[in-house]
Image (cartoon, rainbow, N blue to C red; front, side, top):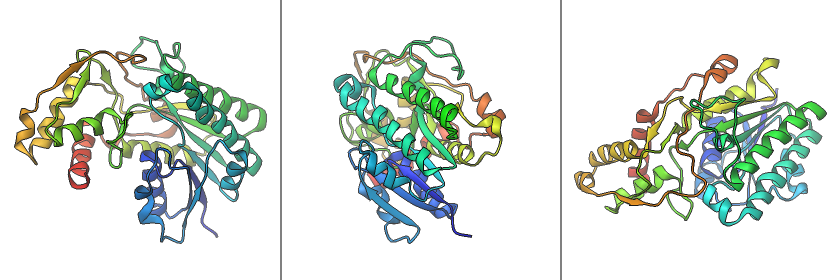
Length: 324
């Protein structure tokens, strides 16, 4: 039997490269990566380039022909390619829309035409919008608070239509503040954890927007890998053509985050414990609190988080210390 083939779009990015490494090296799949390197990095996939079961296709999901080429011969699609960041979408809603909606639709059409067995895609907790209820349950959402959030909700609507109309099996994973190895600390739209780690390692003050009481369900990368694998391979009809929160089911404030980062980093450099924090204005489009219910994923996918926040953060800090 020939090996099953996975297409990872955005496979040179943070989450995509971790998925690629896992399925290529630990699960023995053939993996093709599609990436245009707008936010991903060649360094992330460099170790795979000599692997005969790995293939890199450099291209853009905004090109329908590229998408058709990318899915050819693939059994599964793990669609991670997107322009992330709420602030980026507020600054440039048109490009965010083109990549996240038009590009997503191109991938759905290509997957449908190629007859892929499962289309698993990165959805987002931003879809919960202004809903104040906690924990967040999949079927209760509010109004989106940013162009980015709109694009990720439209992805869910399109996936649902393709499942109903064309019989394409889809599963959306609403990621909650994913962090871990290879998450880029550089650039204007760096996520909070790698950004704060880099600042503290350089003895620079991290900026907390607002009081620091805003909280997030920070989710370590290995939990996300587990959810992608379970979504890709589940054989339960009830578990397919739906959405799942991909999280831990807990929440941590920004103040708590900084305190833990200083504690863990101080083990490598004691001076970091004395670095002060700067307070900045609240960011447009930010929700105050985010915490997922993971009961649906537990029930239908037998999901069990392998890493809670503090455990994952300690591993992430160790990776950054050794790689930055």
